[in-house]
Image 1 (cartoon, rainbow, N blue to C red):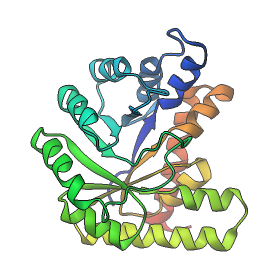
Image 2: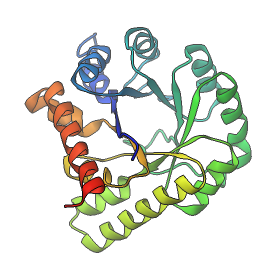
Image 3: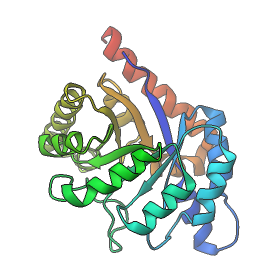
Length: 252
């Protein structure tokens, strides 16, 4: 079974900084602490409205960290230009609306296939690993494979939201979709990641899906850091992930 990586999203360190202005707390410092505590990579989303991460944050992250930088971006020409200049390890193409608080769902890869194709091609040509942030549906997986994107990241938000609302039947349905999508991704030759809304409990459970090789987690870890510190939150998340993987490998 493949090792399970943890990507830590530092967007909301920048959210706290921007609430007051100035330079603190610094998302680059947070990234370095997360890596020291066991993160395998760092994720940051440069939004069109720059609500949290700023352009200079991306440049400083690229220059400062020795682990992979995953640049979340909308498929726009301006973001493509920044990505090609920055040359991060990876770019994850995500849907983006100014009215949303956070990403509300997966990218409509099937419906936007023709418009997404040149972005995937340009990023790959630059040696950047491309991932598509998608709903766990067969259509989205097939469309991602046909674009020759090597990686998909399954949107876990609907599952996590159903659990938070106590909707057990819907939660099990959504987890079934995630499980099926992870299996299908392997059959299509896609590397499978997952993220959005994950906490210790949900990370532990989804870690048991053997096809998933990376979890990207941000908001929960930054929230936990207020109470226990970022390093301790990352270490606890790694432990939860390891427990879930052990169940998959050895059973309860």
